[in-house]
Each structure stands twice: as C-alpha cells, then as structure tokens.
Amino acid sequence: MKDTLLIVDDEADLLTGLKRSISQELDCRVLTAIEGAEAMGIFQNVPVDLVLTDISMPGMNGMTLLNKIVQQDRTVPVIIMTGYGTIEMAVEALKQGAFDFIQKPFDLSHLLQLIKKGLDSNRLDREKNRLQQQICEQSSLEELMGESNRMQTVRQQIRTLAKTDVPVLITGETGTGKELAAKAIHEISNRRDKRMITVNCPALPEGLLESELFGHRKGAFTGANEDKKGLFDRAEGSTIFLDEIGDLPQSLQTKLLRVLQNMEVRPIGAEKSHRIDVRVLAATNQDLALKIKSGKFRSDLFYRLNVATLVMPPLAEIREDIPVLVQHFLTKSACELKTEPKSISTKVLEQLKTHDWPGNTRELENVIRAWTATLQVNRIKLENIEIEDSEGFAADIDLELEGPYKLLKEKIIERFTREYICRLLKQTNGNISVSARISGIKRQSFQKIINRYEINVHDYR
Image (tube, rainbow, N blue to C red; front, side):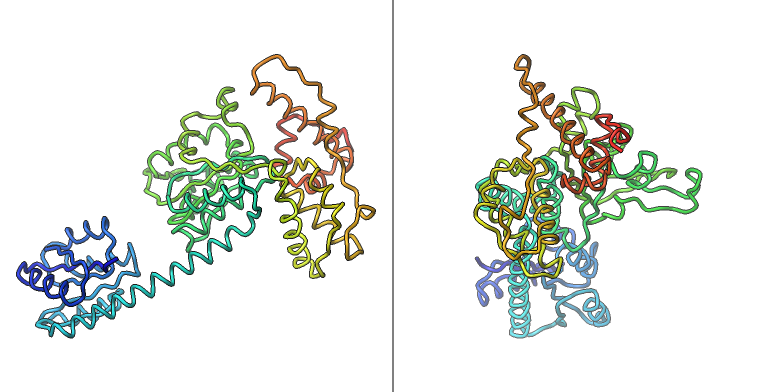
C-alpha cells in the first residue's frame, strides 16, 4: 500500500503545488487540509503515515494540531513548516514531539529528504509495534494453554475482543481461568501500557465497596479524613476487572449501571460527576439469568456488561488438554519451588484425564504443585498418589426429572456444591483456608459459597 501524507497549510496555492510535487516524486497518496480542525478530522478517520503542517494558521495552529496528533498516535511523524520569526516555536515543537521542522521558503529536495526520513521512521515504528504486539500476545496467552478446539476458539476470541473497547462478561465455573482471560484481553489491547485494576467484589465489605469503587471526598462520612481516589479513577486510560460480579450488592448495581451508561463517576460526597476513560471487564461463575429472575441482579446492568461474552470451558469438557496442562504445571511448579521438574507415568496421566475436576484447571494446578512439593520421587507413579474420586457425589444425588431443565440443573448444582463443600470441611475439621486450597477456589469465594448455602462451619470443628 502507498504511504499516506497529510499536508496542512492555509495557503491554497502552496497546498496544490506541494501535493503535485510530492505525489510525483515519492509515489504516495497525498491528502490536504486548509486548517487544523479539518486536518484533525481527516487524521481521526484515515490512516496517515506522516503529517506536514504549517505552524502559523488561523483557528487551530500547528502547535495545537501537533499536540492532538501526539496524544492520539505518537508514532506518526509530524514535520513543522515555519516562516520568518517562528523558529523559536519550531524548536518548542521538537520538544513537544515533532519529528523535524523546515523553514520557508524551502528547497523541495530538502523537504523530500525529510519526508523520506520520516516515512522510514514510521515504518520502523510500525514493525517494532507489530513485533511487540506479537510477543505480547504470545506471552499473555501462554497461561491459557490447550490445543482443543474449545481453547483455540477462546484464544481467538480474546485476540478479537482485545482490539475493541466494549465491555466483556467472562463466564465459567470456578477455576476455569476467567481472571487469566481478562488479563490477556487487557495485555493485548491498546491499554496495556497501564496496569489493569482488579476488584474482587465479594472480598470487600458492602459498606466499603462504594468508596473503594468510586472514591469519596473529605468529610463525606465519619472517618473520611481526606479525599480518596476510587478504583475506577485509578483505572483511568486502562481496564478495570470486576471479578465475581454476581455477588455485587444490589445497592451498588444501580450505581455501576450509571457509570457504564454515562462513563461518569461521582465520588461519595462530591457535588458533580466527572468523565472517565475506562474499559470494563467482568466475570462470574453464577447463572446471572437465574439471579435476574429471582430479582437479585439487574437485567439492565447485565445487558450493559454483556455486550460481548467469553465462555471459559470447564476442564471436564477439554480433557484432551490435560496432558499439556500437566506438563506445563510440572515445569511451572518446579520453577517456583526451585527443584527439578518431575515426570509422570502414563497410568497417572490417564487417571487425571478421567477425574471430574470440580475445581477445574486451578484444582489440577494445585494438585501438581502439591505433588512437586511433597513427593520425594523423580517420576510420579500410581503408588505415589491418591486422587479422591468425585464421581460419587453425582451418584449420591437422586435425579428428579420432572420440571424445567434449567431449574433441575440449578438444583443439582446446588446439591452437588453443598455436598462437596461439606465433605471438604469434614475432611479438614472445618478449616476454611485448607478446604479452599484443596478445592482450587479462592478463600473469599469459598467463604461466599458457605454463606450462600448457609453452611455452619462450627459443625465440623
């Protein structure tokens, strides 16, 4: 494709002459604008490889145009044309990010040399960015391993979603890698230069969550001794990840909806809202459609969050990826524990492939890490290990096949979850931390499940 130049000058005759000469000499596409505002409109809608602009123009001058271009795309070279008495401004333009400047009246051959130099610089920057993006994609997606069709589809969806700024709702069972997916979307996106802010919704007390998310002003409530910037403001220009969004209190669901609708935040105690530039990702392991029916989750908030959906498959549906995951976790665990990687027998691998893995990939990783840390062998065999068979849970549940499919499915999941949690608590004498570690579920999430199903931990101590 031909390079595209944008020439900006308020002298129409100069524009016509430059367009004709540059087009002939450099075989490139030349666009022109007679004022800065017109030039900015072109720049925002057409891929431009170099800008050549006069510095003294009515309305938006060259300096203002330069600043706007640098803010939008720092890689595009801007060459400043200066007249008599504007050299000091040209020097200041260089400090502000201009590629070079040339003084009027100028020699055409010298101008062409500057343009060629600028275009070469632009090509190098584009290639550098392309390679960096490629490396970043590979690094960000390496934790989401697997060669199954499902996982290849997930990775491709992440690449596609990363190119947009739309809200994404990431769904899937606990331990399927929803946070890893959110991290990958952010790190491949144009916002990757700034850190993603992660919010674990159930981990924060309801009374503090509003202040944490949106901030507060000094004196807004007892203990507010100074202004506090909220997590949305800290994510300015970046991404905020709302993990376990299904547990967000209803009182805050309305306020989050307003943020998503208007992209404005109003700190507690503030008189006015202010604009924010934040991309929102959210994740849940719950069926939000059922929560909407029960009145526990706002449907309008769901539709705002669910502009795009990414479904993370449970490990039971991608069993063919277990050998690759096991090898990865063996290497990763050995690196973390500073030991030699262990090998694993075929029989152990086959048993791992048939296990139910209610905690999904996170549970598998925890099992491999535990074996790496505790087994004093170089090769893991069947006689070295014990994997609790979770198939018995399903067998203990009597299926009642009368009623809607979704309702029956929810009942089975609830009974399975309750039984699973109770057995873990019995096994660990009511130790929540140890139970959570065995299950592969975060402690805060494990505690949330206990509260949701009203399980009395003291019965197991």
